[in-house]
Image (cartoon, rainbow, N blue to C red; front, side):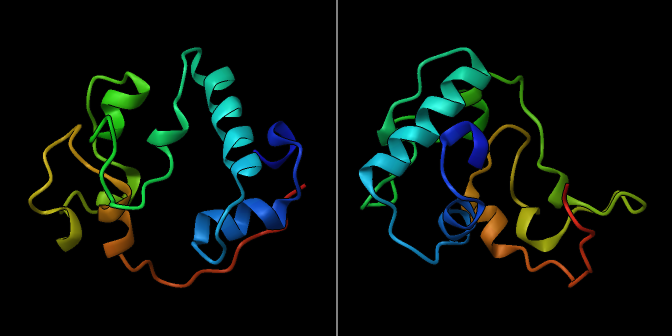
Length: 112
């Protein structure tokens, strides 16, 4: 994503982790990269909100998928749904559900 946006990996990492307040320029570049990937227009208002409300409330509606649960909703070997996703219907989840999920620490291999 960093390459697609023309920014450093650390800028994207800080943005995704919530450790920085993104500039308008960064958000515009992310929106453009998503538009290219999804093949449809993405408003900056779909990515940033002061109130926590967005024009399209569910991620599946935004990206045009038929409805799913994110991979973090369950373990790959155990189909039991995690607590953070127990009341979430397929297609009706947000980043807030992902924030409620606390993954176990695991080492990450080097990205090339």
